[in-house]
Image 1 (cartoon, rainbow, N blue to C red):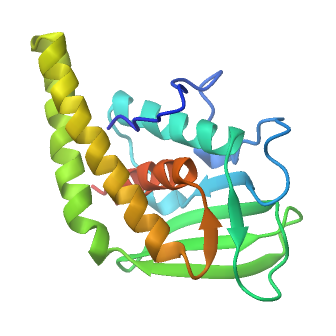
Image 2: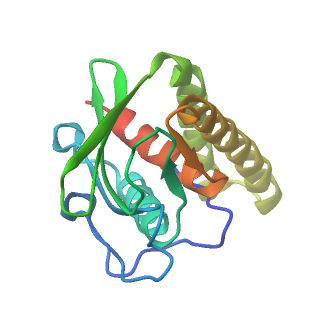
Image 3: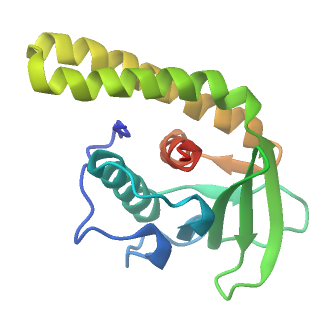
Length: 186
């Protein structure tokens, strides 16, 4: 499930783990941004190495550079800690301050994302198969479709979060990758 980041990031140093809530020491991770991201432990399963790699890349890239600002009146400014979970067919963002004081939970239904996620998974499978046997031009064609679906999912996430959070497109892309990883259950 390639995350298809368009900013040139491809690998995290040292294979950082989501469950550790890794926090790169980067000047870009201040202000209205996410400085610690964890994924709900209940959704962790042993996955294919390619999927685990994409999860690590998405987490690393997200924490290295993101824009995430709460839009609610009275919400504290960032930086933020975020736990991302799937609970009862809902995507839940558990937001807290850097000293882990709860701010709010943002809950979105997963239903609007299902079709995009399903199509994205199918194209990703085709992409992984293509890498083994197809020509570079065939792989590129599949990759363009995969990126298009990834952008569509990110755009939908941006739209659904708009009343709660202002974020940039790259942040939305990385969060969509993490939504897809969480969506892979058993």
